[in-house]
Image (cartoon, rainbow, N blue to C red):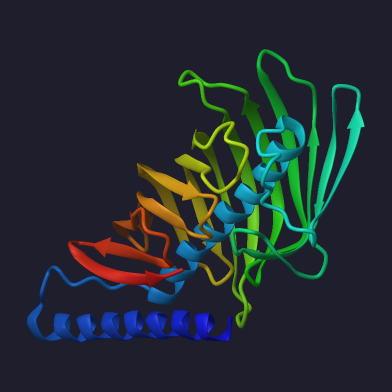
Length: 275
């Protein structure tokens, strides 16, 4: 884990140096294509996206396994995870408790709890309220929560969640924290009913705002569907159009390969981001 943090800092510093070099070039040549932005804040906002999506997928997988019984052959959750179900009429509460540290079967390292309170199924959908309690995702602290309207089947015949959220993320080795507010639609497009989490794939659309406690803010809207594979701890593809610091650009999560790389584009110039 120490090596991962060092790599992230290295690429953030590299982007920052590049931004300074572009500024110097602007002074000398007055190039109208020069891009000036905060590389560190941009990377941190992208990391927030990955933490929020990864945490949500764990919450949803817990609900799917316990209430829908769709992945009851091979579970995402190893023995270090305790799942407590308290039914109440046609609803109930589910608590996913990961203790001080638990490595899930997809490689995500988590701790703390996720709590879900859900009501009855009405018209083929159910409302779930969820909160993160002392929860961490790969050393990032996650708090807050949201509400999900869970459809058994959408117009494509797939399970789907419409989520609204206010999530706070704290990063290691910095006092800066992030808050993300927004709404998303998460459609389960592969692996439905297969009996295992390994082949589960989700398509994500929506928009959200991310604010850091140092004053940085960014708005984002999905323009090419984001793809989350439960077998990977990162988003694997899709494009988010962003607006920040008076600039409009995109973040591209790649071609479907499971890696910690994304590409930021401003004014035709590309910059790497390490998630």
